[in-house]
Image 1 (cartoon, helix red, strand yellow):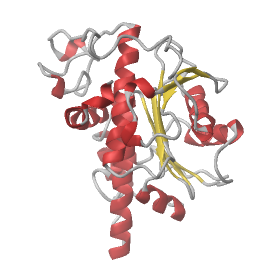
Image 2: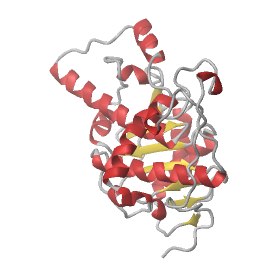
Image 3: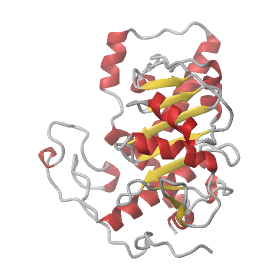
Length: 299
């Protein structure tokens, strides 16, 4: 392995309140000093209204769990809408805010377009379904359990078999800094240069987690893309951005030689690029649309 660092279900015991009854936490209005000092990107999405930057609302454990599940279900629907799913392959996960060695994931056998808050599964570190109805995708557990175990900072992780991500992975090349958008991944991604078939063992998942290291994107050779983030929203937004960057690179390379930005320019642009907050905002813009179009995902 070489690395390229370019880089009818049982009752749900921890489901929280329903969307209809859950109290909506609101952030107090204020200035940037109330958020993370010095960060122009700190705070909740402008789409949620009010002045910004603002601190993320303080939520109870139950409210945070519901929040993550809602964003997770929406991420599946958005991926389906954007054509990022491939049959029943792929999975997006959200770490539980209380049982931090547990994560929420889709039930195997359901198309991404059918995922709702209520049919998500809660899985523990042993691969046991704690809440929800089987089956569990074995590969989802093998990969995501190891990612969440290795990266305590990761709340969300996304991996699907999207077309351009797969195509780029077949070339085993990094995302080059050829555009402003691609620079968001400059020196923040790796190539997992190994393929041993469908990932069904925790050991294989550990190899992927080790290769990913502290980065936000892994290109899994002959497989596809995997992204992580400090929220479900940022992980999903990064996946969408990486898929689009892969598409752009493949199209540009087919047309002629790539003009790759120099290290200084790429590094500077990367510093101006997507943070966890701005990635979350990018997702929230899509979230507002999907819950309006498909409100059943919140059930």
